[in-house]
Image (tube, rainbow, N blue to C red; front, side, top):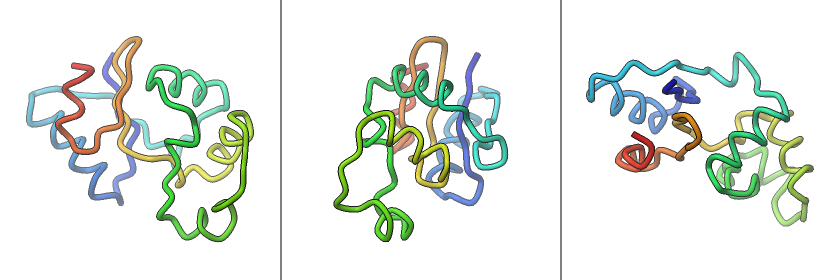
Length: 113
């Protein structure tokens, strides 16, 4: 099953979705701001991405800069922070079976297709 973790208000996320649609693919769209991920789901997704949670945090967000920048957190703490503040999660993330990729630039999505 092809899934995209998507925020329609984000131009990069929209570009990732367009990339899939232009290839004739119809992904399941997970609007993670409306349908929050569980800690277990996020940990599973990070394992498929082969990245620690700290690398999937949007450091340009005002919330990151005001509350988290310069502080040290372990993996479980970062997962909880992202779950509690889902807008901090980098997007889009495209998942296919046992693999996932952060779709910036959109051509990176080829890595899981």
